[in-house]
Length: 332
Image 1 (cartoon, rainbow, N blue to C red):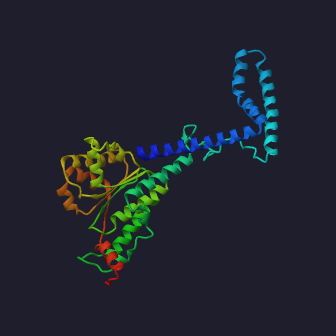
Image 2: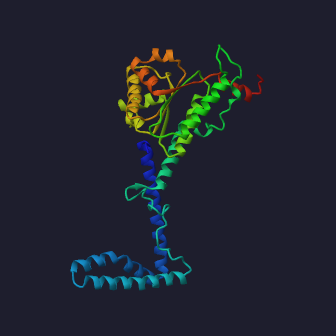
Image 3: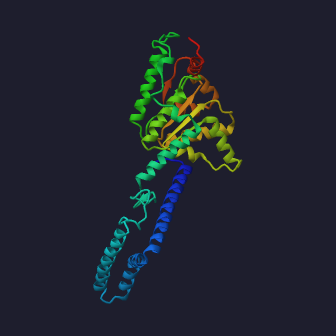
């Protein structure tokens, strides 16, 4: 999955901590048991030296098969004695074994080169937490996206009311999630401030993360600032374009409110174009109209966006203001 480097490193660090903690706990338990039962200690170390003994037998070359069988037989006798000591001490048979958080990969994250389910789950959770730190992710779901704030009346000669338009967009976003994969189409959400573009893009992110995909969300100005600081080595920022190109889904929120410079325009074009070239989906939201986009960015960039993104044009009036008035007790 396309998670960024920081998330991978954090999960790997967490796995190392879990593994170390489990092994330290086993050592404490083992040492305590050995003090109470000295015979247990000698049996334990004799059994655990089996591999070394087998290696010596093989190297010696004399009666290797016979000597290995004798060693195995002796080990079985020792294991039974060990189990008997533990039983008499009212301790479980596996008392001296390490209790890893994940018994499948033993908190390594991989089994035979394949990522373990526990690591996939940890990546999902960390991705969610990381995104939630940057945005109101937990508050932005399809379930709490209310259509009641959009008018039933058609305006400006439109055949459809804002509520009908937004109901259709809501269903489109839900269907987008159902069929999402690494090669899904990109979305361009256009509309005035406060119409729910951020809410629905984060609702999509919520569901995509649950499916195990790597999602990066960021307001366009913040992304540009981070990349600028990294490029010019300000505040020891370590981040580059690949950070935003490699993820499974990139959400660029509020395109058009960043301070426009040659650097910002070039960096945004490179990210968007690179993702198009490798067929990775991007969700772009903007308060700008199509005409304003054409005036704000190069023809090449707008052409790439318009030619590769499914357009969702939001309708209505500022929902945030309506919610605020509702909260304050004002009646419409």
